[in-house]
Length: 168
Ligand SMILES: CC(C)(COP(=O)(O)OP(=O)(O)OC[C@H]1O[C@@H](n2cnc3c(N)ncnc32)[C@H](O)[C@@H]1OP(=O)(O)O)[C@@H](O)C(=O)NCCC(=O)NCCS
Image (cartoon, rainbow, N blue to C red):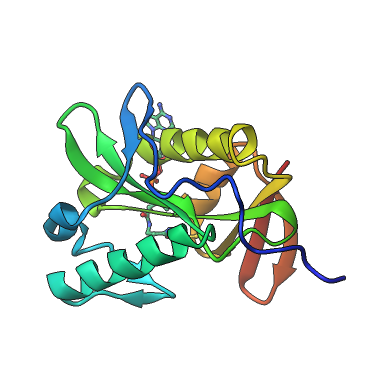
């Protein structure tokens, strides 16, 4: 099957703020570089300096301008600090969004990502008009799988150690 176009015409150039009870999702900016230093990845490669974080953000911004990404910073409403990131990455082939997420270690274990993924998924269906959302994770990544299960994703594919979860 030939996948559909990977760009989504409804992707905004600047990620909108989405308000939740314990987290808000908002656009990430270069001013977040210090907080993002421990969790900034692009194409699976970790940033090793704040300059690399800023370079990652520039690449993500370019991907978003092409309609292939929506990237948010997750703000902990209790402290107003940056807790992590969540978004849709690597295009939208056939109207399917691929979600990715990471929390700074100090913000784990409180349910913040469960709420953040819920907000992003709702935006994906209601605003981007997605047909489905998928997530790829490792079988050993129990906390990630728990987030997906709490957010209503179901296991749809197993390939080696990789697990693909989907929500429609
Ligand atoms: C995957 C990852 C985001 C999960 O973080 P997390 O803190 O476990 O997820 P949540 O923020 O949803 O928190 C869930 C925990 O908070 C608890 N919790 C407390 N209040 C909660 C609430 N209201 N709702 C949901 N969970 C709540 C849950 O019981 C759970 O704790 P437990 O693991 O002791 O059972 C984090 O481990 C991470 O960033 N890992 C590295 C990056 C990564 O692997 N990303 C995924 C790649 S596919």
